[in-house]
Length: 302
Image 1: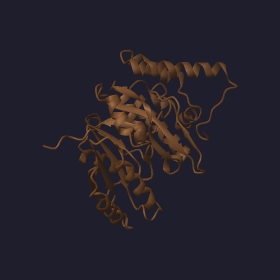
Image 2: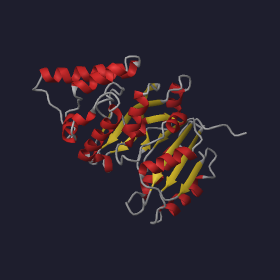
Image 3: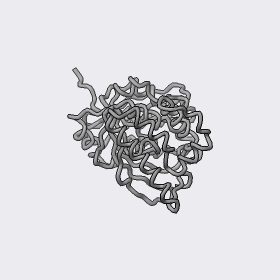
Image 4: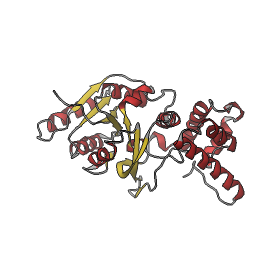
């Protein structure tokens, strides 16, 4: 009997040839094949591409399938209603205990990445885990995210989606990505899991290489959706209708939450240590900034 994969790597594709990413998807596929962690699979879920992407991927699969250390690839193509819909479908089709999303132009940091990540979570079995990300800017410059924790998760997106491992069971239990969101459904999912008291874990490793740009680089659009994510998730703790979208966008811009929002989250979550810590941190940051008006930040410009 074939054992269940420990990790399913999920890559979503659509019309990559047309967008000039033919080489990128090949690099992504190769980086998964080079992983020293043997108990993995690669799910490639295509959204019914019409530009030759399907043939490109199938040819690449044929090229690597005969290798001795071949990582099994499951390839499927069908219409979807967007990136997050395809991700949800791919998770349903996967077999791994954990899933990690790797964009069609991104990479795992090195060949030992998944083996190291698995070594950190194999006994603790968190509902989601997260590590650092190596970012590559459009000018070729690079930097690695420093301290990644859930302490700031209530007021900002704290880590890259591609550097997270979700326990597949938890992902499915919570319904996966909410398709109402087009660019930050990942943040919404993080918040839903976190506020429910799910187990989280920091992996002290760099997980993915993320090429900056694309949809989520539209920071104003991201800000507007983050405001809606807050409205959806914090509405159970207080009346969020008192905060118009323009006000919430302002709070996202300065990297804070209104004091009453943080306080309400805290009041309803005293028994959840992670949520309690994040709410106290959020409240404290806003309070300190009110006493330090000369300190500014703008998430809409970086």
